[in-house]
Image 1: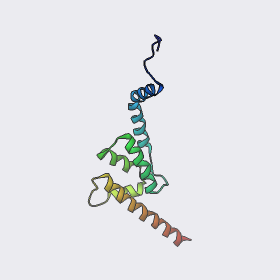
Image 2: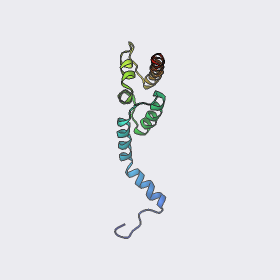
Image 3: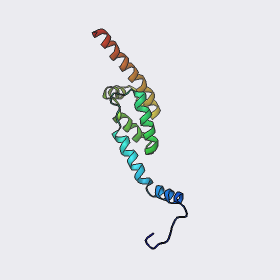
Image 4: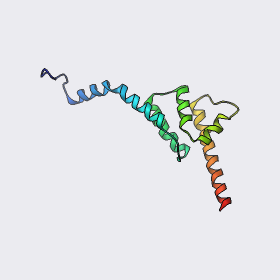
Length: 117
């Protein structure tokens, strides 16, 4: 462009080149977002939906993906999952088990509140 020559035939071609050039940075941003993600007060289902979306975009998989999932979930649920006799090997197993424990934990909290009130 400095010499006055046009390197791209169209704006679309320019944008495609630009996107290709910065794809690595995009992935790094998605990884950073995944590492910051936490369940906090959300249900496990809500947390998992966002986690799955970010995981796809980060391209994480396998053990690394499991470690990020564990790190972001509610501490009580994580502790219970870590205490299981048969360790979970796949992210799908972690998702299923976390959903059940989260539902049980929330039901237990509701029952305690009813008994107090």
